[in-house]
Length: 465
Ligand code: MYA
Image (cartoon, rainbow, N blue to C red; front, side, top):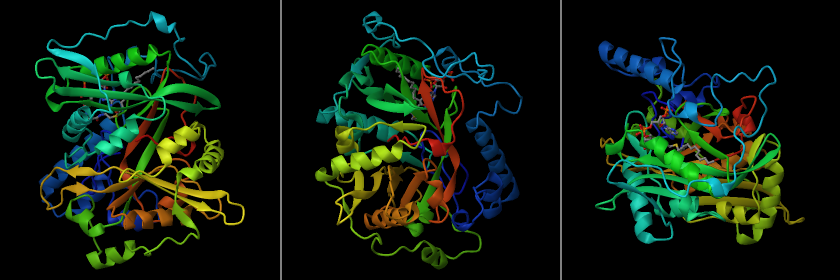
């Protein structure tokens, strides 16, 4: 999950927040992002409070942007500077650096069979995600300690069904679901996961792991446990002869291959305003705003229906052909497509358009359900129900028309907001469909794989859960 903060909209997004105002959504100018300044203008605070908010927001923005900082000193990364990842100091201009692995693969049998050293009183475990008690423990840890927005108003709340889906794709390994427990009570206090995948990067297919759900209990923060967790999962992944990884984060680390942005499309504007996720534009009434976001009751695309198991081969074909267009994309076989894209109640929603005459699947819609807990308490609502655009392919209609239907389907399924990254061809529908730009970035990273040139988000076709 995940994109940065202002005072207008806050959504947890892998360590950052996302923001939009209703004004943003209908302005045609892409620079309509909520800025600290614009949020100041829109609020009725006194001058001192307002000024303090602006300064806070600017500081947060600089930190997120890894903009060295105001003193012109490079941000140091005691851990990340020791890892085989692209560094900000890399000079790729003279042809001395090659695209590809940074460190050579070793013999997997040389990998240490024992885990790294933890602080006294803690021990490593593998989390068996088929076990109901373990699922509950992981759920509890994440529900109370995972990604929040900068102002601690919302926190991701992955459901247990979602976690089972995200962590048990074909070929998954239980030992890549790494936990740390308190020895005495066996309480789970930290977590990081990897799942196997194949990612094509600038033409090279790489067998790697997708890393996700890095989480440390709030009481154990800032003790350098994260590097220990990362080294441990690296050891376990290397022991299975895998030497590369892909991951996303809101924070800036050495060194992103791409920077994407979240956009938000209001579906239940009244609730979004109520919970402080969005605020109304200065000149708009609630009635006007509801009208502006109104959607048709039913999708428009002829023949749109739920995806079924029978569609898997044809969806695999359609999706593979589409993903081939992008510089960075997963390679999915039929088993992967069946796992990741068949509908799962309250987890992933998928729809196809089948051509009556040819029986071909021509179009595909998918989004997943990732709610956030409302933790600020100034509302009767407990949960923000958010749909996240996943993989979408349009060939018989425009992507814009197809995504208009996706919004209708999300609304029908009772979602409050529809979120999408500006990946792939998503730019073509974001503004026309009244998405408002978030004010934070989601950075894409590769571990032990150098990419010579940064990629625009339109070249990234990987959506991680
Ligand atoms: S992104 C989601 C991250 N999770 C959250 O935001 C949940 C809430 N936050 C927390 O639980 C903690 O604050 C975390 C840090 C655990 C994030 N990715 O222990 P520390 C570096 C990578 O004192 P804490 C996701 O899940 C930081 O720059 N590194 O810090 C993808 C510093 O290093 P350096 C991060 O706050 C995860 C060091 O940790 C992140 O107590 C991909 C400080 O450690 C971050 N999101 O804990 C992981 N945040 O000094 C990498 C901070 O060098 C996988 N840090 O700057 C790499 C591939 C591994 C496999 C390879 C196989 C070949």
